[in-house]
Each structure stands twice: as C-alpha cells, then as structure tokens.
Length: 54
Image (cartoon, rainbow, N blue to C red):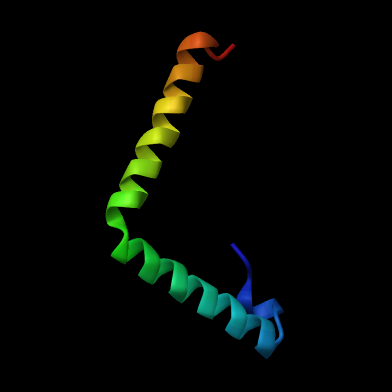
C-alpha cells in the first residue's frame, strides 16, 4: 500500500480516485469478486496438494 504522505497532491488525488472507483466496482460486482476469489483459492489449494511445503 502506498504511503500517501510521500506523494504530491496530484498523485495523491489519483490514488484516492482509483481506490474509490475500485471499491465501488467491487460493491456493484460482488458476484464477480466472489467467483474470482473462489478460482484463486481453488487453484492455490490444488497447488498445495501437489507440492506440500517443505
């Protein structure tokens, strides 16, 4: 996560706007977010079965 205090005003506004857009998108598309998370964790669970941690 970026430290906003180290950015100039223009960059800070861009970061805040991007975060707001992404948050709104996730709220509107909860089904897509849930499906993506399910695919992500399913893939990682399959990898863990194939190659257990040493």
